[in-house]
Length: 367
Image (cartoon, rainbow, N blue to C red; front, top):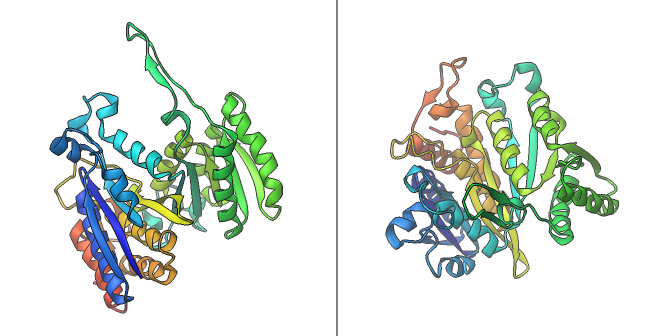
């Protein structure tokens, strides 16, 4: 296979977690006889410092010509004082909107090797959990009308959804549930919000096409509580942009560290899946440049890239198995350190990436 992968390392720890993930993609390409070409671009704070804008002209079109985008993280306190349309996060929202990636998949899986790092009591996660969060990504309050009063003493942000936007994300979630445990939970605030009532109306219609999937509804406050109380009850969760942002960060911590969570933001381009692949964590400026960041979320995002945009299931599983093998061997970054298992080998971002690389090239002996 010949394909082109766009790379935006971004800000903070972004370059430190993207570099090992790119090396692993290069190795997988060689090992499985594919030709992966990489094109690097800037976006976010680093782009603002260089070009005076967070998403340089032509970047979206150049990325659109690629098969997928691997992204690090954007943002940081250095740019917090900029106007909203100049902040690094604006570039991320613009990329998602312009590239049409409306479905954000965030798997939260508690691996057996990391149960000691889960903050919940053992009885709550004794059987582990495997949750897929499906977040609508290009509508809702993050993209609605917003503004300030003339004297700046009041502000507003508008949440808006239409039937088509809700239906297409529901179909992604139902299709995912069909291939899993066939349980879909729709999270909303229908007791208060009119947009949530529309979500329920559309769900009641769409669910008749997926009769083998059990459909449940939960208010977002109850869903947040249930994720802590009993995460294993969930299979696929689908929700709007803001609720998905918050709940997926909550679920990520339950896996042992937010550094473990990958994500895929998917859309359609010429009949195939184009995606933006990135870890759920932010730019973590407090540890940037210190070789402390966990690269596994980005590496697992690269595995999702192989699976969803390139349809390379065997190659994706090779990466995921390598991560599991490295964790089996006791390798941990600082965020995963568990005092109950003192035999853990604590290592930096680069060393963890090298360990996964070694597990791919020599699977019997991860170092």
